[in-house]
Length: 232
Length: 382
Image (cartoon, rainbow over all chains, first blue to last red; front, side, top):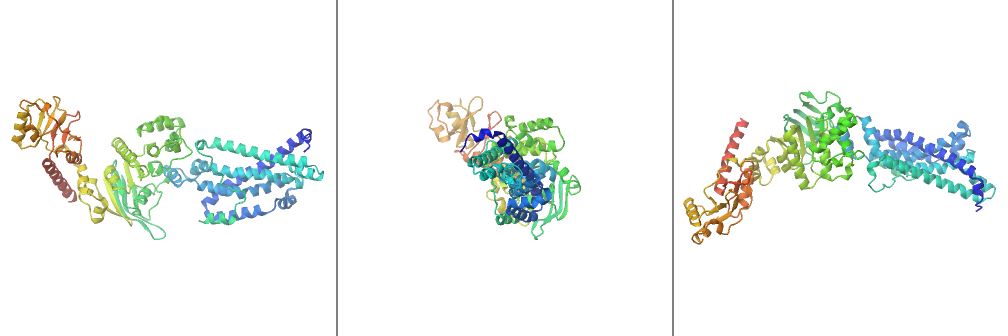
């Protein structure tokens, strides 16, 4: 480790960290924006859920670099070329979490809401989505961390991110740079995760005195299992 | 008033949940639908607020077919309480209770004010207003459920096994609370339970269902206990129905004896004379205010020293008392059975003795109450 490299390059480290954060967080947010309506549709029309999940899993299986390369033809070397694949990848985690979150609303709660005179949309907005927030945010945490990590690969097609330090460090045979890049990706991921925990606590004051729920999401859900869960 | 007109619910797989139900729930009365699981009682209830829609027949709410209008508007005029409360976990107690007023477009402050009134009404401490449902006990959550159902002051209240998930002591207090509320509010209540005791306690009328969704008997609790329509109802009503029915007969008609009630200043010799004269083996000793002190056996009176008063002699505890003006014959009989002397002490609201029972007096009171009920029953049938 050449510690002195770090203060000398602090400006670049900061700039690439911000750029990497931007790519990762925007992707996860866009993923959430797509997953919430998609998840609602999959809960309402349950037969749609298995094919939606299969497609999301299939997309997730595409190597990210390959998808970047394909997209260059359409979006060039812009941020969109990284953000679009990362958004699509995040669906694989987020859609199941939105669906599970909505399904986690206890049946008596749903029934009581209907019987109180909530129409379907109001019930969704005022009862079901709020109650599903902990599960949805658990998925968002995984999606965000994974997007931040994957965003560094954008450097391979020239979209700047912390990946620059990996490539540059490798080419110059200068490990300090690689380590600094890895450390910043981890710091960034942890910071984003912490931020989401804080947001969840603010949005779900009713859960404050309970034990932390375990995030039910896994990074790579097994498509076969999910399909069965969707049909049953 | 709620009217079921030949209502049937048949599911796509051919299962008949409710079979040709005709039933009237009078304004301001509580009708309990009772029966084993799968008898269609809950389905019948849910058809009133359209959580389930009937296959055949009509349900009228004050003459209007419930299927006619908008379901959400219908439901906001019908309170709904369920077993697992269905409280919104993400809303505070006050906001849970304020749900329907808020849906009806009330301002938040006004709706919360109403929620606080209802917390008082159902016996919840206002300090709980900003807590969340999971921080409350089961019994408290159920009170919140009742308050939420009543918040918009709906004329109709549907209760689906509302007290089944709480322990027996809490259940009894919730039932008492419901009776107290209902005495003031006079809602039209449809109450579903599988517990016949609960049905008899809370219902003005009880509708007994059998599996397959058929109504077997609709009657007052007293008539259900006295005149079960068939063997099924008799089995369902269960053990001890003769004794339980006495709960519905007032003790006020009981002919109480006062001749064997003597003040403690009475000389033992005089008391012996009195007891022998009326052929009573026991006398009840009272103080100058006519509060009961205890029983004395005739044998002890005869063995008492000369010049002794009743106050000088050892008494046997008078046991449980009953109130002839408010209690039932069942309470009077119970006190009589529990007493070591086979006699129970009737008292007024201040605890003064108004007389004592004997088995013989109980027997004739029960007999005349049953004869009167039989007369009402035959009149009602004709």
